[in-house]
Amino acid sequence: MSRVARLGAFIVVALAVLAAGVFIIGSKNYLFSSTYRLKAQFDNVAGLTNGADVQVGGVHSGTVHSIDLPHKPGEKVTVVMDLDKSTHEIIKQDSVASIETEGVLGNQFLAISFGSAGQADVKDGDVIESEPPLLMADMLKKANGMLDSSQQATLHLNSVSAKIDSGQGTVGALVNDKQLYNNLEQSTAAMHDTMLQAQVGVTDFQENMEALKHNFLLSGYFRKRGYEDSASLTANKISGLPPGTPLKSFTYTAKQLFDTRDSAKLKDQKSLNAGGEFLAGNQFGLAVIVVSTGMEGDAQKNQVLTEARAMVVREYLVDNFGFDDSHLKTLGLGKQAGASQEADWGSIQILIFPAGTEMPVNRQAPVVGSPVANSDSPAQVTSVAVEKQ
Image (cartoon, rainbow, N blue to C red; front, side, top):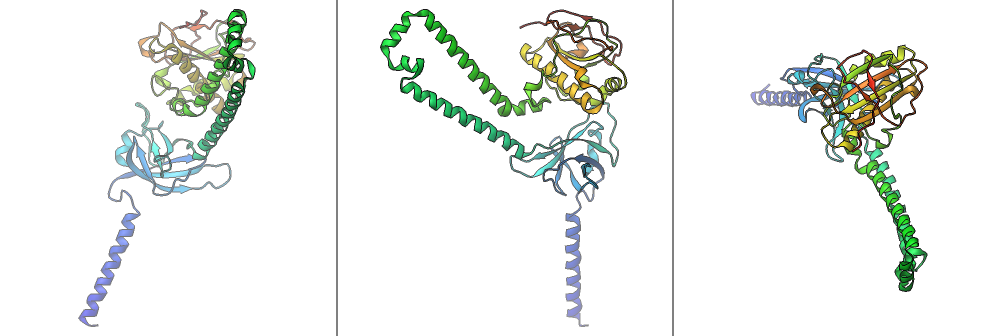
């Protein structure tokens, strides 16, 4: 072989090795850094792909290594992630993985929340909790429903406006007939009735608009605070506690269970397991989840917050423990004076009453005595009216 041929063969081999190296390195993220592996399981990965970004606190911290389909129906899709070793100090056993979208129609990526201080560290190969992705198709269906309702309201308003212009009805006659207006001005009683009817109509319209806002415009507000449907907050509400001493009680501070002072999103669900196991393993007549806040903040918002916290605690217990949930009720008290400094975010109690306890019929809501964190002794209950502001 001539010298030129050998040189050409060497160049070809070198280029082939270089190209192979580029492909190998391109397919290996964090090739020269220390990583560990975590898993999360989803019912639907919403378009997430291999190699997708994994973010911790909004910072790129890893990649999706693989997405494994289940072996049989009913099982979940497993997402395997390779994470930088530096995240090991902030990802804990209670961290949650969620599938997010960059912008409105951007690429999917995996986001992992910070863990709580005091929680155990994750280990290589652990499976962490996950929450289902928010699908754009579901949002569009809700938006279409709202638009259909808006179009019907517009058609109705146009019909009413046309009738007024043509002089139909009381309002149309008032607008088009000055003499009739002068006559009606002399009949104060009839005018008063008309005004009352108009006020009722305005109130109904405001309630409809408020419902539309809660269904779409404010869904993000409620979702960030741990609940999506504001109408379901009082679905299992009772007016007060029954007489007598609880068979068992479990007490927590809101700071133990929830993300922030104004949130109803659970961060430490496992703390509720003792109460759920007791409900599932013992006979009881009535159980009530009683929630209150301290005296800071707006009274109306705190009332809604306590109802939402009671609802999400109830949903967790019902979803994870088998018992007759028709006997599990909620009681959001809103602001309550006398909370300790440790419980300034509010308190949560699960009060379990013995078999034979009847549902209370009084209209006054009781105030539960000063809660002690993680106490399981029977609560002392004093019946007083809820503060109205």
